[in-house]
Length: 142
Figure 1 (tube, rainbow, N blue to C red):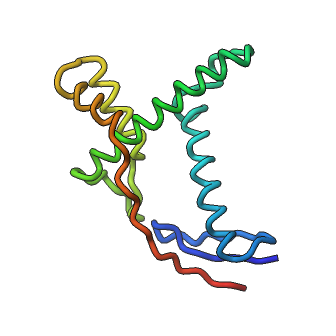
Figure 2: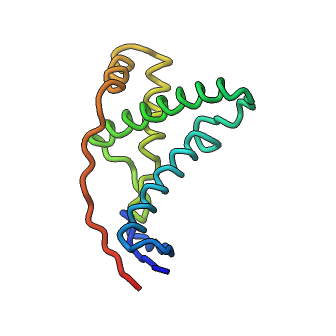
């Protein structure tokens, strides 16, 4: 059993226990956390996938695909905004509003009012995300 202790980007201590090698634990946990966050945004904390009460697999599959595109689009818009305008932060240095929520706010207003902002949002839908910077994590092997 490996116990890995690392610091999150916000400086919080994260402790993970696993039978995987240490570096695999960190890599796997980061991937899993991204997936958990995406599912949370698709479900109760965001797009309310569960509220549809659909049971037909084909319909659920199509809706899920559409919501994944919408989630990626909102995240892309939010990422673009936070590049130019840093979000408000709390006392611990964490963003008060997530990048995806920022994108949702911008996209919902743009869809409602149209105009150049909506055209900018449509252009972002076709653009790739900027390459992620590689951060150095500090970890301790116990």
